[in-house]
Image (cartoon, rainbow, N blue to C red; front, side, top):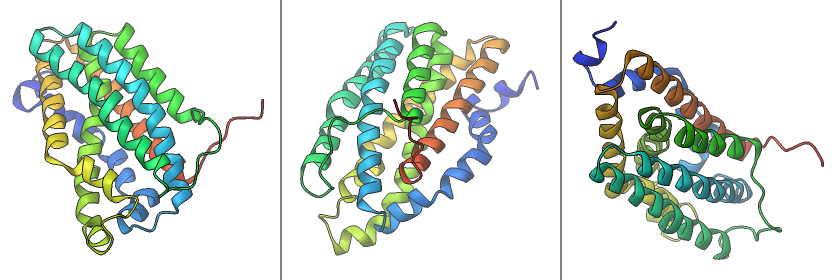
Amino acid sequence: MSHAHTTERFSDHLWDRTKGLRAAIDDLEFLRLLGQGTLPLDAFAVYIEQDSLYLTGYSKALALLAAKSPDPQTAAFWANSSANAAAVESAMHEQLLTGGALPPRQGEPEHSPTCLAYISFLIAAAATESYAVAAAAALPCFWIYAEVGRELAASAAKVIAADPAHPYAQWVTTYGAEDFQIAAATARALVDAAAETATEREREAMEKAFVLAVRYELVFWDTALHPQPWPAA
């Protein structure tokens, strides 16, 4: 057990540790309908609104992670990812929400309980935990999205071929794209590098943070189709 991290990548262990959660993600009705192009537009609009709010918080967490990074190259990766989340991906979300393909927005969107919990966890990890633990918490958003994006891009190919202007096409192709896949691989390699110099106790904390973030990924997608509203004010 104590030598596990020397015989395999630490991230392999994290991936294996979350096998059940990842199977549950793969089975989500939301993702199945999204891949088929039959997800109700209002559910997709809810998801995109929440994801837009999420990216604003995630960008802050990544900026904090950049500030804690052990070397300039690592800092540059997290800082660039923070800028991408804040600018590039948010612009795509804004275009989807205001371009007429989705139902018009009613008032200012409010963080769902899951969205607020997830970004609060990530920002708290980035602000108060070690660099290694904060990086492990940030990794699922890259890695799970890259895997789901690759699968969705394959299943959505027929939908996009029949209707290139389909509302889901732009979103699916972004996360299945090669540059996003490369970013996910880089984030994974940085977590592996952090694990190599971490103590056993810190690696346990990294694992807990990673598992919790994967749980949030699962619930975040699921609540787009099955919302959990806040109690009335």
